[in-house]
Amino acid sequence: MKKIKIVLIFSTLFLSQIFFACKSNGQKEISVNIYLIAFEGSNLNGKKIGCNDILVPITKNVLIENNEVEAALNELLATPGTDELKNFIKGPSLIVYQVNIANGVADVYLKGDFDITGLCDIPRIKEQLYETAKQFPDIKNVEIYINDKTLESYLSVSEQGFK
Image 1: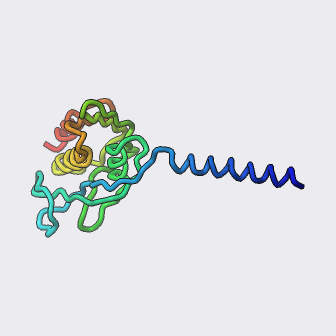
Image 2 (image 1 turned 90 degrees about the vertical axis):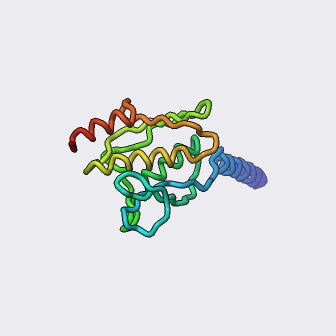
Image 3 (image 1 turned 180 degrees about the horizontal axis):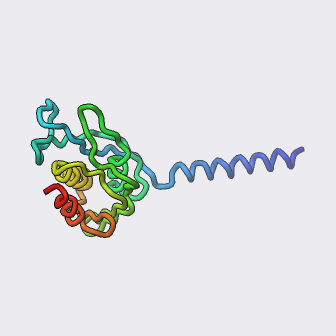
């Protein structure tokens, strides 16, 4: 009976160590802004962008797994639009594949495609992504790639389809 108690005590201690190690695996929660779009005529405050839209910051709490840029962009992808605030960062199988940060530059790699329904979607997509990624003090420049093309190249092909 004494051996069973000792085994149970050590098992409990061992499991509690594993539990606390998993909880403190380097993840921390921070507040970030994600940027959504309000259409012309909205009373919301934000940065004016193309097509007279307004880029509106929304504060969210996120867990950092790799880096804050990746966490913020994943939150942007996961956030649905509302009646007043639209999210144009959506599309078939669209994911944040990887974010590398070095010397103040964030290289963002996306996979998938955007749902682009008109010319105004192009500045909306650019502004939402760049503003969300560059909000952090250690980020001086952001380079975004989608399916191994620069975001500008990817969107310029889409833009040609609307002209």
